[in-house]
Image 1 (cartoon, rainbow, N blue to C red):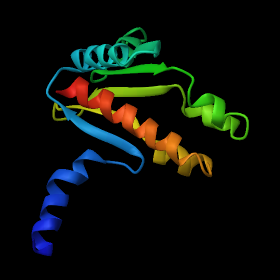
Image 2 (image 1 turned 135 degrees about the horizontal axis):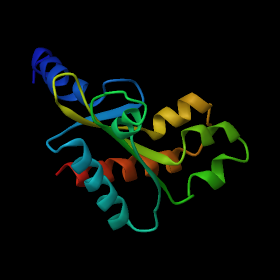
Image 3 (image 1 turned 60 degrees about the vertical axis):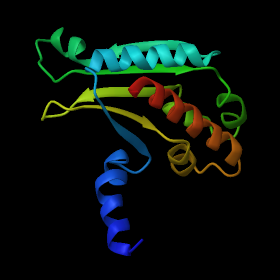
Length: 149
């Protein structure tokens, strides 16, 4: 496979998935509300997770007379990441529990975004815990994949 084809593939298929370093961003064919409903169902099906909160930013803005495009976030976790990380890196809690954000962009396209284990590791200077970060990536990618199928 020549280099041009590989670069073309990366530009059109890989780059849109990671719009910002450390944040996985994937397109959704569903509305914002349905995307988060599907994320919630996937989290519950994964077992062992607790739904912490669901935030509807559009509804929240409306309480103050504001109008924004649809966006909702689901916060969830099961504590497995907290125990090995918080004793030495207490600020990692600012990025936990896990969360997924569904939002509509200016063109009306819906996206699902979430942070990666690589982002946590880099942002908080986490050394070691490679297997934990790999599992975190696997869990979030799996939940997102099921929600978006």
